[in-house]
Length: 234
Image (tube, rainbow, N blue to C red; front, top):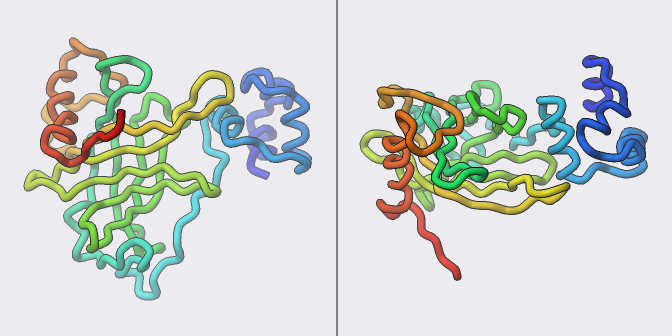
């Protein structure tokens, strides 16, 4: 079990981990013995304490020739999607602070062994929540999907067709850690801009009034103002 390995490697006691993750020792012991599984909220808290993911990545099987993605991802060929490969400045609203922007790096690349596009995140202030997964690009909708799949749990970024500048805009759908063990579904606009187009590159939580906040906010607002996504409801 991955958690046992991490405890041994870090030389952390079970009681120490339970205290840091704010869970009972009994809950931890039952999960380690296999008598009762962790809830997702508990796993997230333990990952936050350890600074590593305990959940395995699940991706579809690769195609035979390694140059054509599986049908479940849109059956795209590598030559057809080379334009999307590269590093992107990723922007979304900060959940914890009004008007603030959260900026980090997303890398989209072709996985030779798997035979499809993958993505990874880095430069995140909350590194324990760094995401990675596969990229789906079906011709039917013309949208691009960045999907994290971990033991049945999904995080999804849905991006519209790229602009001439290769910028992409859309929606992020994920879970936000709330009070106690609660996880809440949230959604927000998101923008990806090629790193080579950014003159003043900064990552992290960017508060209003900062050097690049206004410029980054202008880019992020295009997701809504240019009609790449819409909000409905009360």
